[in-house]
Length: 191
Image 1 (cartoon, one colour):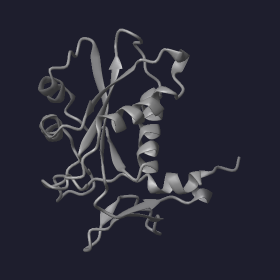
Image 2: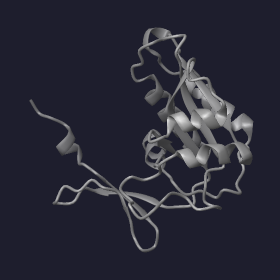
Image 3: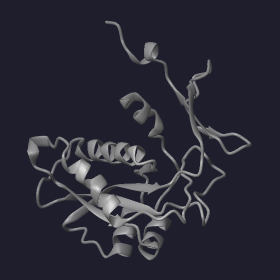
């Protein structure tokens, strides 16, 4: 059922790093994104795929992992993603982007969840340093998002936002990642 797939698609930040992903798997996930809608059908997105540990090491230091978890710098060695998909804007195709990259990223992550994988859409990226590390032309391409992928090593649970209205995600002593979500009654306006 589609609802179950959406519920499985959480933002995972710890992985079994030794669970390798094949390049073809990443290519298949981007193939799903290729099928999605694009403003004016311009298709300005390009992708960098990485399932190579040396290339992954070039990507990892330029990512910020969990803004609300102030005492956590990100996944430790052994818990890092085994793959990444970097979503780029090809500046030569279109100069103004809408929501194409959000649609593509969500589609990739839903495809990953269907395959029993997990991921995290990361927008907090040192784009300049990552481009330098990858020798990417910033004249032609803009880094939009990085999707970390792998076999999840953590449990993520959804719970209702409490009476105080705190929406910050948190981890308990067992390492379970809790994500408060507003209720349907709160997010649907009756006007």
